[in-house]
Image (cartoon, rainbow, N blue to C red; front, top):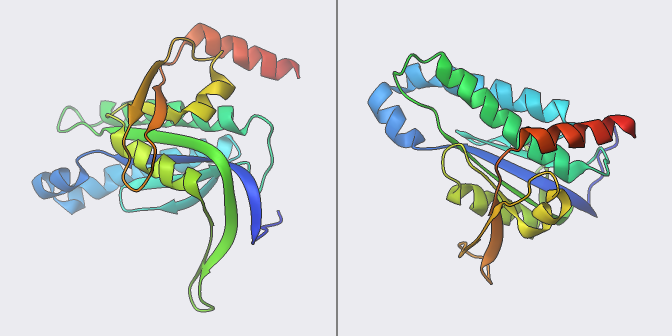
Length: 203
């Protein structure tokens, strides 16, 4: 795998973040919450790898991932969306093991666009990552997502609208971003998803 830096690339960005994590930490104690967080990270990373995405970083209680960099896929937007729903399914499985002690809620935001691959840091501490509006928008959008919800930008939705017909359109004023951002709340349609998977298998 060749990791290029200093190049503009088309990328789809996914952020998945645990809701009310600070409150849960105070109420349950970090030693009780950490195993659940680790399972969330493990589940999310596995799903992202299966969809040929790259886990860029784990941010305390959040996951940031890229699709289409450095591994190119024509259907990178759909892969990111599929990963989002698989993460939510994984969270439901985690909650089923908690016996009602608490409920882990995760919101997901996805944006697609052009970003710059770069190496950040110094010779002693470096990080290969991407910078651009799509990263900022995906991050801000996941902050608006309710537990269990997947929010995507209009550009994302245009690519996968046939798989998720009738999604609700909403607009958000996102911090540091102007004008308001149009987004769609996705609901998984099992029959449409199955048809999309069949079309993909025939390629």
